[in-house]
Image 1 (cartoon, one colour):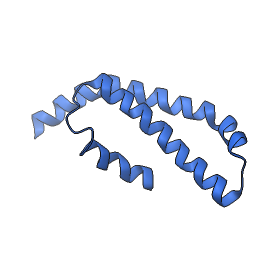
Image 2: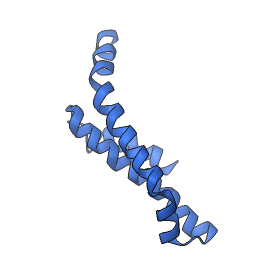
Image 3: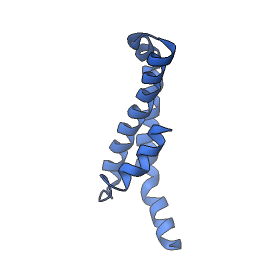
Image 4: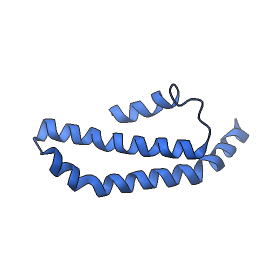
Length: 88
């Protein structure tokens, strides 16, 4: 829940002026890694899992999440923004 709360908070404060889809796509990559790392922190603290073993087991999924976030924002931000602007 922490990471999901940070996304709208940061996008309405720090990254409010960014309208370029490429910059937003890289921001999505950053959020993807932050989202994955919040689970790592919880697993280390609660389940006593080794940080290195968790990271090695999860790196493929982190990369897949980052790539899918990057591509979906890059391809869909402008078309969706035009549709929303037309209705609003």
